[in-house]
Structure formats: structure tokens, C-alpha cells
Image (cartoon, rainbow, N blue to C red; front, side):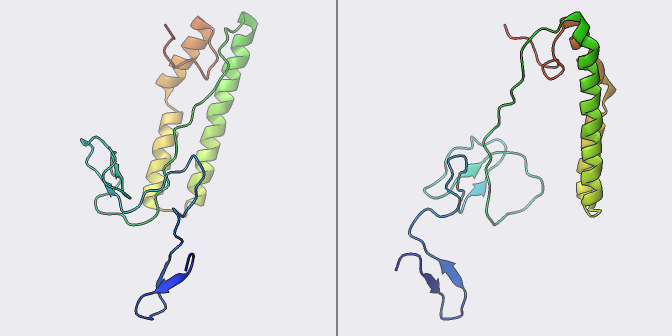
Length: 159
């Protein structure tokens, strides 16, 4: 019977059998079932029917069992325009405000994390990246010299 729950040996446990692919079937979601995470050196190609090998860097050693949510890469869009001289200081102000907002958001996330040592370490690393003076100087240089928007500043020029 489609969609019925089938119990193992009458113990009340079991899994639902839907006859379909199950899960979230939105086009931006990919179902990963019975897959193994491959070595970073592997190609990351489809392994066997119903499974997939994922290439990447493991966050921790071991085997993970559960539902995987594979997110599609997102494209960041920004306006590609040359700033006028009068807009440069305003753009730098927007950049500094964005850095401050990112720092505030990260600190709030750290406060909500419940004190987990691992989460705190990750958030601290992000805070250090956001506050990096070398990056800030590079962005400021691109804004002043090339008259680029701050969002576009650290990117290489298109040929």
C-alpha cells in the first residue's frame, strides 16, 4: 500500500514507504541517500544508483548518518559602476558600516551559541577575518584608486 508504514517484526518501529523519491523535492535541493563522503582527492562523481560520493574537507573524522542538505552555489550580485569623486567617501562609510554590522551580528551569534567551544572558535575566526586591516586597506585602495564600489573592490578586474 503506497504511503503506508511497514513495521519490522511488529516492534512498532519502521520506516514509511512512499514509493516516491521523498523528502523536499524543490529544484534547488538534491537528495543524498546511502552516500559516502569521499576522499578530497576523489573526483566527486556519482557513485552508484541511489547514492553519491561527495568530495570535500571533513569537519571531523568518522562516518555521518542522516539527512544531507546540499545547497546550490549562490551568485552574489552588485552594481558594476564607476564612482564619482564625490561618492568615494560615502562608499567608504558604507563599507565601514557594513564591517561594523557584520561584527555585531557575529558577536550576537556568539552570545546565542550557548558557549560551545567549537562554535565560539569558528565565530572568532570570522570576526578576525571581518576585522582584517589588510583587507580593509585593499578595499579602500580599490575604492579610492579604481573608483569601484566596495562590494566589487577586492575582485579582480574583468578582462
